[in-house]
Structures are given as C-alpha cells and as structure tokens.
Image (cartoon, rainbow, N blue to C red; front, side):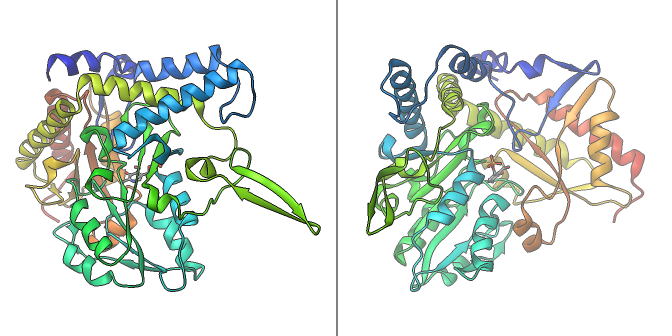
Length: 420
Ligand SMILES: Cc1ncc(COP(=O)(O)O)c(C=O)c1O
C-alpha cells in the first residue's frame, strides 16, 4: 500500500471501530464500501448549514447556492464518468434506480423492441427489463455464458434489426474480472442499437465508467465508492438522451402546463432536467462529489493496482486451501475486485461459513458476502448457487487476505469430510 493509500485508509472511520472487542476485516466492498469521512462531513455541512432547494425553484440566495453546488457536483460526476458534458448526467439513487429509469424511459417501438442482456447482469438491471418483457412490452434475450464471461459471439447472434438495447455489466459481481464493453458496444452499434453499461463494480476502483468505451448510457452507485447511500448517476449521451421519455415526472421536470378545450397538457424539459423529478438528494450529491475528489487525490491508478494485487495475492493464498473452488478464469479475475468461492467438500455450508466468519474467529469479525449476490442470471446460467464472495477496496491489506485464508482453512478442517 503506497503512502497516499495509507493516508486514505485512515479516513474510513468504521475501520477504527471494534465489534464486540474484535477488529474488522472488511471483505464486502462489492456490496458497499465503507464510508469516507469527507463524504459524511460534506453531507452534514449541507444538511446543517445550507438551506433551500435546487432546480431554480426559489429566487433567494440559499436556493441559488444550492443549485450552484448541485451543478458543481454534476460537473464532478460528469468528469468521473467520462460524460460529454454535465448535462448528460442524471442524478439517481444508484444503479438500481438508473436501470429502472432507463428501462421505463427507453423509446421502444414496435419495430425495435428487443433487449439483449449479458448473462452476468445484476438483478438491478435484469429485473426492470424482465418486468417490461412480462408485460408484453419488449422481448428479452439473454446471451450465453462461456468460461464465466459473456460469450460475445453468442451475444452478436442475438442482436439484430429489432434490437433496441444491449446491456453489459462492466465488472461482473460474482465471477470477477471485467467485460469487453468496447466490443459489446461495436456489436450493438452495428445493428443500430444502443449499449448500456452497468459500472457498479467497475467505477469504484477503475475510476471511471463505460462511456469512453462506447456505451451510450452507463451508471454507478456512490455508496460503492465511499459516498453516501442512495447516491449515484446515470450518464446518457446526448443522441439517446434526446430520445428518452421522462418516466418519473413531477416538479422540476415541466417546461409548461397548458389548458385547451378543457384538457391539460404538460410539456417536459429536455435533457437531465426532465428526469430529476421533485426535490433531489442535494446533500448526497455533495457527499458524492467530496468522495470523488478525495479518491482522485489518492489516485485511481494506485487504487486499481492495489486492489488487483490483493486479488492476485488472495488467489495464491486460496490455491492451497481445500474445500472450496475459485470460480472464474484465473487470468481474468485480477482485472476485477472480487473472488467467488463455491463449496467443494462434503459438509461445507455457505451460510454456516458466513456465520463462522462473523462470530467464530478469535479477535476478528470477518465480513464477507454469502448467497446468490442478486445475480440470478449468472447463477442460473453457470449452474452455481450460493457462493462466498470476498471483495476488496483501497483500505484492504495482505493481512486481511491472510486472516480470511486462515479462517477458511480452520472452517474446512472443522466442518468438512472429504470432497463433495
Ligand atoms: C453489478 C451490480 N449492479 C448493480 C448493483 C445495484 O446497485 P445499487 O444497489 O447501488 O443500486 C449492484 C449491487 O451490488 C451490482 O453489484
């Protein structure tokens, strides 16, 4: 860990807490990253010292200061996401919110009403489109899986003249590594379709999103990089943004409401303003901007290199441990931030192991994720069910890797009785 990251690590106060007297070994950053002090401070300052709401609703200075601050956060997010301009950024509560917005605003037509998903889509992206498909509004296709990655040849065969949108997860949340967004975008564009990229697991340590790689829309969640919960953004490039139809409407989205012949009609604002209905999470956006500034100062290349080195070290440690199997292609995994393990010995229980890590390790509380990781498509397509996922961020150390490997070895010798 370099000097800058060592300084950054001190700014995640949860790491200094003791849990029943035990030290925290936090290996669940793919679920949510611990929060940065500067993000909490920025949010608190906003809540306690500023007032008014943005969106140019009121004329007074508090409201204009709030709007200015909100736009500054939008500019910071635009820079981070690789957006063409701040006007291409819609603030959301995270990727789930962004995917619901996109699915329900998308300009499907009877001639272009098919969506092709990668087999690694999180439920946050899969379910909004599955709902539209169940309601008969679109046709959903899921590309095949090959060696724990999207089979791009298979995806290309599903994309055709009726395809409106292709969705690819930039860094899958179960099998790790990264996906080839550039090639997926080329496949979508060759058929006249758009590409959406889920950057929830990519943005935090790669320090960017899929827009520069050709995605027409991409989204990330603030809480996965140390910013407040319920923050994030959807970036939509202008040609697609101009075609989206506002889904959630309300105050702040309307250009004018008219009445003629006893009928009311609403005309909506163009660009991001048509999508940010009602009072927004201004303090959350300030916290998000503060987190991005702090991470930029530490340096995303250093964060990426550090996380990747921890994944590599963990793969090496795990080589010697019997009782589990690492999922994914060995060479791909360090490109991401996580490793998933499937049980491979009789007596290994994924939920019991999770509890063991929580309660049964002397001196440490080891936090990992167990289960299906909200990735039902990946589970159904790979045939794996519950797995154990360890995930890393800027604050983790080799000591954390060793603690986990040691605990795993102890659990296996206590609970397992030979191969499955
Ligand atoms: C790949 C991926 N996409 C989407 C999400 C949903 O993110 P959020 O709950 O912040 O909306 C997650 C959350 O774990 C994820 O891992």
